[in-house]
Image 1 (cartoon, rainbow, N blue to C red):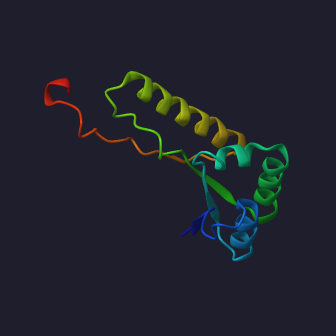
Image 2: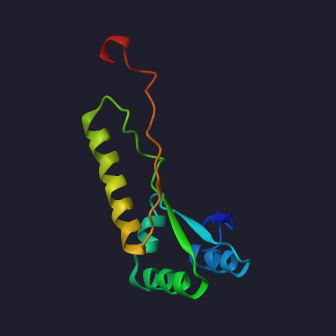
Length: 120
């Protein structure tokens, strides 16, 4: 059995600090929360990205990526919102690939209460 925890477990500490603390506890994996506006940009900064790779090697960690969900809705009837949501997922998948992660969590979305039944 593998045990993993979210990178925001020690929020509001910086992610890298939280990941180090979790890795020191002997966890097998860390879920990297990639919510906007800060998280994915934070992880992609060259120094933070290289630290993620070093921690992965040093501790034998697996990373699991949690794609943005707050402003995504692939179930929207609005094509622009659907397209932007899928683009966010693609960026998360690319990020996962760059870390050697094989798991990306996404939230599909929801049907807006303002939509008419005829539109569905």
